[in-house]
Length: 223
Image (cartoon, rainbow, N blue to C red; front, side, top):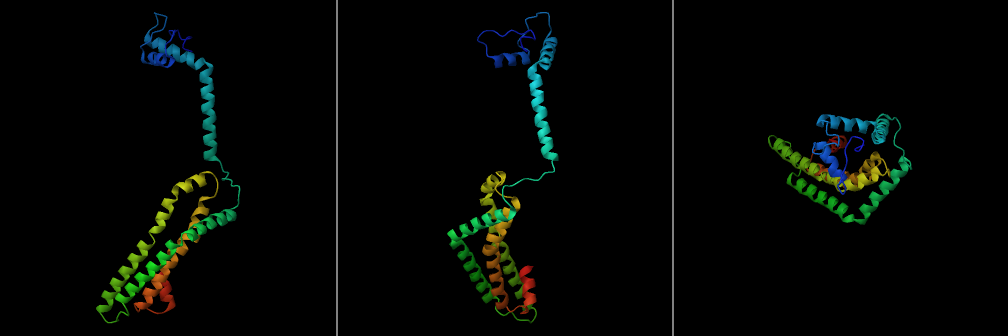
């Protein structure tokens, strides 16, 4: 295309540098009467008429069609295994990781029991007379909520630490995103976060002398 446009590359000249000279207007065509604008226009027209241009346009059209098809496609992603099989495998792996490092679970439970006893002893059997009842319950609920909130923040770190593994396995089609999330909830968050917090709430609740009805305790632990 360059030769057809009237340009002649010199011997031992770098083709890439020569092409840059043409686009910058530093290289003139062999036809001396041709102006700079005419030379660039002629080169552009020659390129549009060449097979290189046709090949590039066909390739771009093919890529555009594939992207459009993926964006508008109604077919869902296909996996080699079923949802239940993926759940069983991912949950089993999570349970094995917990069993290989049981100190984490034991420490979480022991820490919650310790703090529940501490809070329960501080606010043990709170009186019902005002204003002591209101002040004591405000302080007790403050400690309870703080412990529940910060005790469950470790669940966020769980997903952050395994982010690279999840992206690799999910992009490779090993399992669905919902499978990974549900397996972590069932096999990790519930036994390592929800159960210890429930034990903490039960001990502290009844030591502080709050409403003993089970319905009241259930409302407390769920909210």
